[in-house]
Image (cartoon, helix red, strand yellow):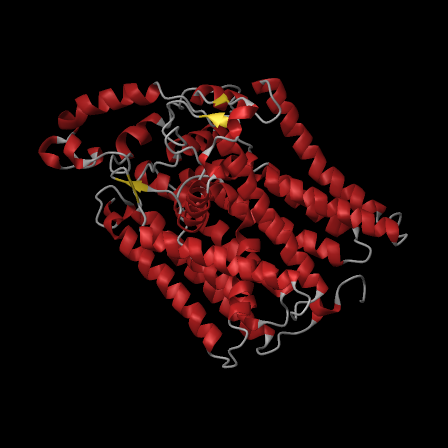
Length: 510
């Protein structure tokens, strides 16, 4: 070990030059940008995953207004929701004259659509934004981007897509972070170093095609994961590393409240490092770094917790949302009657969560925009490859070194904590007459809520695949398998989402 960094971190790639590898990753970043642009442009507004609610918060932040209660939708947002909202996400053709959805209002003469627009406008003015207490980081960035779009001359429908296309930059950064993470954990394995960014570039996660804060969670915890792994490997961390780690943890917390499991696991990692420093007698030398980490992470978190307590009455701001949705806590004795404690119920929860973790939750004509076969492939391969990875980590006979075992263990515990958190939320509430989750389907199977674990998960997933192919000596097999996976992801996504492309409400028809 030199300068507190594991020697494996500084080894050059084994089979290709660093410059060539970087060019491949930049190409993957470009392909990721094209991928997100095409599918984000094909999806009309506003999807069933609360897109109009997240738009409302971004617009309110652009007006310099941070909500202090569950307020009605902003007057600036109402015309967008009225004119550009497609009914095809949650509507069915049979509910419309002639069994067909009406053409977009903005393509029709005003006199013809005026009565419908008046009714829609009145309806939207009565809508309450129940996400008002969401942390502010994404909405602050979205507000700045919204302002920039106006400065550039965008308005109406193109301005909506301008805001949605902000995700392109997030996903490009995510692909690059995936490469940095894989290179940090597996400096000697080209398949894993390039496999992680390749899967990130083509993952069919519909949250990337929507105005919402989930994509920023993947970016924030991806950065925090890399920095915490470096913290663990550094003999005496410096102030710069402590500061960056603290800021990444703060960004993760200020992006989405569902990132709390990642924050808890990260806190345990920091405590573990403090214990190691104390045992080696180096705690005093690392004091400035740890102080910077605590201050940079803690002060923004405390400020937002204090704001929520003062404004919404509880430290996370979730109580008012739960009350609005009419969820009621179950008595402790009723928790154990939940179907998740049966084999069928557990698989329903796990498989549904993993399928939406890969593909998202869009509906189309009230049905999931997904394929049961593709869902099953994603769920089974996830359980299988991550299971192989965990077995390999627990086995001392594998060629994984201690630093890799530590990083992958951190990633697995983070992913498992997110799954357990959503399982816990599924158990403790009676969802009354809520559409999702519901009494009939009392599961939080929203994979987007744990997208923070995307980079650590893919490290485990591909490591498990690599271990499953450990007896194969041909060097071309792994790249061919990876290429096959990417083709499967892309072709299945095109076949599933093809019905969006001819839709008259999308960007291509504006």
